[in-house]
Length: 511
Figure 1 (cartoon, helix red, strand yellow):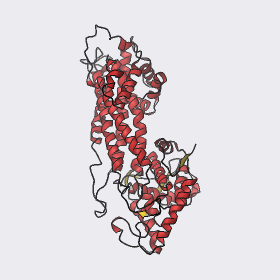
Figure 2 (cartoon, helix red, strand yellow):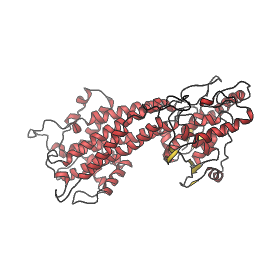
Figure 3 (cartoon, one colour):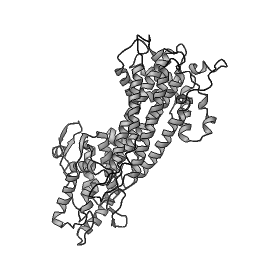
Figure 4 (cartoon, one colour):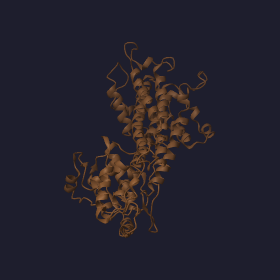
């Protein structure tokens, strides 16, 4: 099934599908018509004796120079070559594919003035699985993601370096020729149109939102297992109590916890009057409040992403009535802010997860379990150092929660004197999400061990299914074993979605 790129907005799921799964793209007929129509506007301005920014002038701080016709192709080539100035490690393939798709989506709106063959070249590269090599450093997030986009435009010109569908690094010209793709010779306005956009940070936001949705549901699963394993109560998750504070994310998390704990013999075992425990620690009792806050933050971020996906970002832009106007829509502030906001929530969810894990390991707080869940404490260390790993990651996540978007730095001879740093916000969010997945995996690993140690009391059907799925790759309690492979197996169990699928096989879809 193709993803159709038209004059309207792409869905976030379509971005994920093309970026990760290699779903082919096709330009809609109405998009091709609108591209051709706006190109006529640009061509008319190119023939005008009066200078027009981006068409017959230089760029940025050099915008005052009028460029004669015979130098304009050189101007566009030079713009792309000079802006392809990234440095550092390669950016992930899925990020580059998302970036290219989103630039293509803006081209398809007909607001940029490129030729149809230029847009078609982007679609051809995506469909051939050719991925330009883009580097970690170079974008200030204004005017958009200039350097990353320029590396992609360079590849469309048949220059620079790419990776082919099988991951081999090759010169772009060779890879395009082998795929039967004709390199584009840029004309007036086109180089500028290919590099002026928030596509990198937006692509990473779409991917991050997709991943965080799954991780938050998985965090609810790990929390439910911790509540069970620590002989906590599910009474605080009651719908009427949650409704007293009507945040939608909180309600969803509490509903998940109720579904996950339903039918638990462990929970039922201490519900009688003989139980003297008044209330659980915050890390158990306040799970819906913390996990729910992250959900509500994510919902806001998804709203911003949807608006940005519906945007046509370029400077100058060809308006619907045929004007070519300078603007500031390339500034990444809206996207940068929510990327930073998500990093804060990711750190908070990881922090409460680590606290729940730590409670399992302390015999003063774990309700009768061995110290560190060790087989023979003193001889065995159990999960002692697994919690250290969690703590190290959580500490890193706190540093990654420091906003990038407040750290503007001027550039282009003070013409671009306030920038968004949205690319940097997106890069650190990707690292933060990896850390959150690892922290949740360690909690799940530790909670599963505790559930086994509560035998003969049985966990709920849902948490038992999750525990049993983990046991396919990680053995149950016993003497000390090499722990790193078990942690990695749990990380893959979480990241692959198998932990979530195991729970939902019992509960149905979680919120």
